[in-house]
Length: 344
Image 1 (cartoon, rainbow, N blue to C red):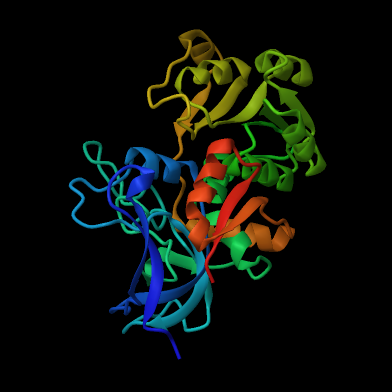
Image 2: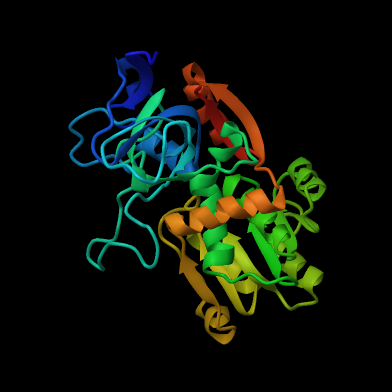
């Protein structure tokens, strides 16, 4: 018999002091909705921005928000009219609930910002209600912990390289850093037969990346990583770069990109305002594209890719629900791969 109460984390304004683990009633799914018994939720850099700086909180905030967007779990109940799932199905959430395929909703004046875990309610709870359109089937080959890492970081890398980038075997992919998106980018590039260069400031993490299949590692603290890319590619440059730092760091990626190369703008560690030289941008005809995670159909493609390839997401650490604050601290330190909270 299902319990009537559950635990969930709430955030009532920016700052760690506004985080609370509370007791709440288990919600009931309405028409078209599913109730998911959570197994795990994974963290992304945006969750740190949400908790610490309030980035993504609804304005005005009228009630406490449940954080995190990336859920894996099992359908515990369904509302009237649900056709996509049945009780017992293993599912994962979608980050952008309204984006099923194509260009998605939004306008030039008001682009789509409806995302789980801010400003919409998130998933760090024992039970979560989602509309049936806001979930996809979890991979049969992955555990709940592993599956929870796909909806944001995994899909972002997949969208950049495959959905938008049309990655081909033999191309060169540069990933900046060793966080969730970067390690997924490395794995996805290797699935497609690409040559992978990992850039990091940590020799130990570079060694781990090479153990997982990366062809080259560049320690940006010891050498100019752009010059190292020239050396490793015979001056041709990189076909795809996952730009996870942003800000003025974009200029380095512009210089490292091949003629006709692609740069996927993903991270904002160096700030929300980007800058770079017009010369390499124009003369090399580089495509620079902002990546907003991706749509549901691409997430289904990503699930299929992990099932068929047998690959498994890289999880750096697993925390309990009670230790969510410690998981955020781990994110601050810079994980190798993903940080996950085990719920069920």
